[in-house]
Length: 110
Length: 155
Image (cartoon, rainbow over all chains, first blue to last red; front, side, top):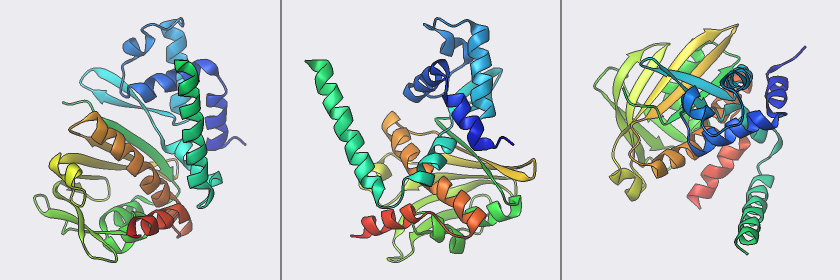
């Protein structure tokens, strides 16, 4: 039987859906219309991907007036992180991640 | 209505009453919330205060804005122990507790945040607190990481 974690990994196993999460990560709280801007996907495709992300609890929506606003919900990824990254690894993982980001930024500048 | 800046939804295998107790009683919050003990009489207009479990210093404060146990809890929130954060003033924290297929759906909305930086700081702060709350309610133990972060804070 599928559980909540299966849904998360299935939802993440798609580049278009990861792209939508990236956009929400950069600018959290967007309407469907705004999320579609500049994407090569149709509005229907975006809407379908959002439904998969919402079913996995990776995206949550809040109604503000007549608008439905989409938010990146950090809970499932946080729970995966806390499940496998323990007390002692945590600082090393973050240090290595910072190092990787810094080195890659330097590459981009040169 | 303003657009909320931070929304967090988690499903916890427990009851709404237990989530409510974990959010409103200091003996529980000190176990999963960076060792902070919450204190309030939970009537609208009353103060909400967080104290460090060990030093008893005031860490955060606010006022109860809405209280409907065990469903809805809203309070204003200001960090008291970091001068720069304190200077940014009050934001608003809302918890909604719903039953969902034998589990509890807990939604946290943190809004009225003064700056993007404050939103980013709170985002980083909430994620371990809420993961720890979930683990605490499901297993009776908080996340070990949170204890180590507290210790780190005290050094």
